[in-house]
Image 1 (cartoon, each protein chain N blue to C red):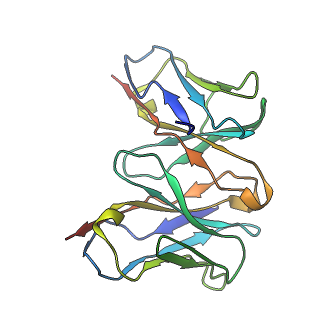
Image 2: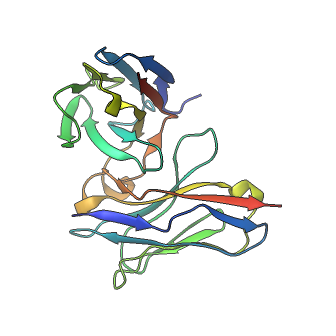
Image 3: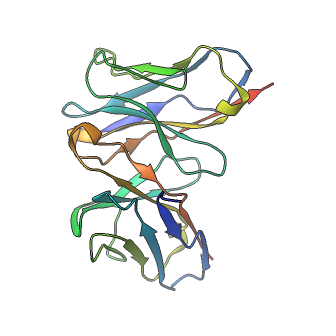
Length: 116
Length: 113
C-alpha cells in the first residue's frame, strides 16, 4: 500500500498524559499536513510542512502541540498534557505541493484520540 | 473570515435519484474550490476541483461549477447509486494559499436501493 499511513489508529489516554502520532506520507510528496476533525465537523487545519520546514501553524495549535518532520519524510504530532477537549480524529495528508496541484491532498485514515 | 457553508444532512435518496448538495463560501483572494468524499471506513479523498470562475469540475458522474457571482460550488449528480453513500465535504484553499484547506461540516448521503 503506497498511500498515507498513520499510527496508531486509536489511542485512549488519561487526561494529563502525553501522546504522539506518526504519519508516513506518500513517498514522492514534499508537503505534509495535519488536520483535526471532531464529530459532525469538517477537518480543521493545524499545520503543514514543506520538506522538513514547518511553514504554517494554525492558532488551533496551542503550545501543548508540537509537530516535526525531521528528515522531510515521516512526521510526528505530539500533544502534551492532554485535555478532554483534545479528543478528536487527527488526520494527516500529503501532496505534491503548489501550483496546479495545490489543494489536492491525499489523506490517511486518521488517528482517533480519546482522552478520559 | 474565510469559511465554507454546506447544506446539512443527512440526505436520503433512492437509487437513480438526482442529487444536489449546496455549498457556498467566503474567501479572500481567488481560491480553488474542492469536493472531497469520505466513504465508510476510508480516508478523505478528492472527488473534484475547480480552480477559477466558471470552471466545471467533474468525476464519477459528479459535477460542480465555480460560480463567483453567487460564491457557490454546488455538487450534482444525475443518478445516484448505493455506492455513492458517503460524507461529502466542500472546501477551498483560503486566500489562494498553497494547499491549506477550509472545509465545510460535511453532508452525509445515504442512497437506498
